Each structure stands twice: as structure tokens, then as C-alpha cells.
Length: 388
Image (cartoon, rainbow, N blue to C red; front, side, top):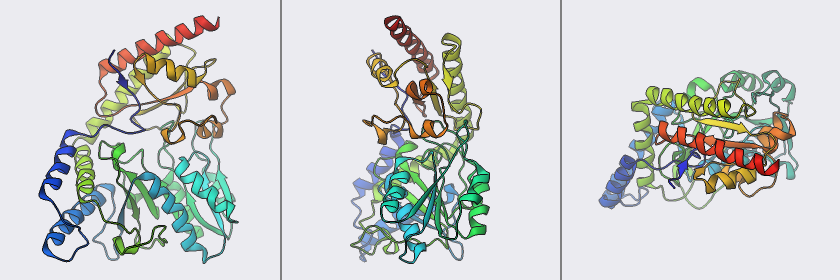
């Protein structure tokens, strides 16, 4: 039985063109880009060309005066952790302050914020409505004179619900509070304009848009203050030491450029596939609920509840039937806790317990969607028969 991969929010298969671009870099045998000799300078040129190209696609300007910055990291988790810890500490003057994060953040934002709380910081959660959209009016009420950082995701990793980050930015700016956004599930899926968002920092990760695993970036506005969380080198202005991966940067650039070439058609196609998937499930299983469906969503993400069924049991049954999906975030895999995102939406217990995430990508086909619906309907029917 062919497996149908519907877990692209966890990771996406790398595109052949990306692999080829990385292979060319490896074949060139580039030296360490921090080295001052000519082989090092050749590597530096490739690296900086990739940095500038990626920044331009993401809406950052590395050539402005003063310039924005794009710092390569090992991925989204490092970039999010660094943003929360590094920006909060840089703004605090060494004293604990207040951090505000939305209640639907990825664990790589929530857990660093909780780490600060353990060190005496105040942590406040910005709640969401039943559709999973942050309560804009609550942000002003939460900000205190001790606020040092706010972090609100651009697009949720479980429901795909988009957040009004551009509307939150003026509130933070007026209060003098840096705003970070986790754009890992958005970049390479829909246009992302860093400067237009008005945020101080933005996180992206290459393997979420068919690029290589092992590289991401934190985009920083020209005036953003941040402390390093890694030490031991002068690379990337001393903000993130370590030898910069030239081949991975070239792969990340290639993946974003491939998306940019046909991003409008890509978004239309994914939206059509997601709608086809949800419609097929609703027609065959009228009881299913699509979480966050009334909100503006990413085109590739569908959080579906099967009331009365246990999501973990259903996940295993679907995997056996050749449908790969997930219970929430892959970074929370193995946790017995119900989804923090869905809990924050205050959904009924039967929805919380029975929700699975299905996410599509560039390789997903219409035939796969139809077959996935067929398999899901069959498995759900079999499980309900056993229960009855």
C-alpha cells in the first residue's frame, strides 16, 4: 500500500533542484567562509549572495541604511528560542521583566518563555477566540511598564489560522516593546513581507518549504537589540557563532526562489486541495469539525476533529492504512497532553481529544487527497463499529 504523506507541517520533502544546488556547492569544495584567504572569500560570496536573496524574498532590506539583518541558525527552534531569550534579556538591563506570548505558540516559543518565568520573569499569555485568532484588544491590557518582549505567531502550526501580526505591531511599537513573530509555517507558503509586518524579528525554517533540514534564520530589524545565546566565535557579527553552512544556505535560497516563481498558482492549488479534502470528509462524515475554519487560514493546513474518537488511536490506525498525519506539532510528539492550541480555543472535550492535523505540500496530488479521504472514512467507520 502506497503511503500518502499529509504531514508537511512537520517537514517537507526536499525538492530535486534544491538537492542539485547543494550538490554543486559540495562539489566546489568551498572553504570556511570565515577564512580570509581567497578560497574562503569565494565561499563567503556564495553565502552572502544567498543571505541577500533570501532576505529580499522575505521582505527584509540588508542594503538599507541602517540595514536589516538575517542571521542563519540551525532551524526554527533555535531561532525562536534565541528570539525569546536574546531579545528579552537585551531589553531587560539584566533585571527580570515581562514577556507576552500568544496562547497558541509553538513549543519553541512557549518553553523559552517559561524558562524566563522560572528565572523570575512575568509571563502573560495573549488569549485567542474560539476560531483561534488572538484577541487584539487584550494586548494593550496585558502590556505593563516592565514588558520587554511580545511574540505572536504569524500562522499557527496546528490549525493554520493566520494572526493579525501587522495590527499588533503598532501597539507594541507605541509601548516600546519589541515584537517577534514565528513565520515558520508561513514563509515559502504565502508572501511574507518583513518590513510591512512592522515586527522587530521573524523566524523562518528551510525544511518547511521544501528546503534542507538544518538551516533556518532569524530576521532582525535594523534597530532590534538581541543578545547571543551561543558563544565561541565571531561569525555573523558575533550574534550566532559557528561555521556558516554554505551548501545549506544555497539550498534554502533555491527553495525560496522556486516557491517565488509560481507562488500564486501554488497557493491556489493548495487551497483547492485543502478544500477538496475537507469537503470530502464532511460529505462522508457529517460529524467532523474543521477547527478554525471560520478564520483566515494557511492554504495547506487542516485541523480536523472526529468527535467521539481518540486521536492517538486514530492516528495509529491511519498510519497502518497508509495515511501519514499528526496529532498537533511534531515537536510535541510523544506528549500525552492535549493540544495547547486547541485548549486555548476552549473547544469541547470531544473535539480536543479527537483532533488530527493534516498538512499538504508541493508534492501532494488530487488523487492522493481523494484516496486519503477514502481511507480515513473507512478507518473511522471501522472504529465506530468496534465502539458500538
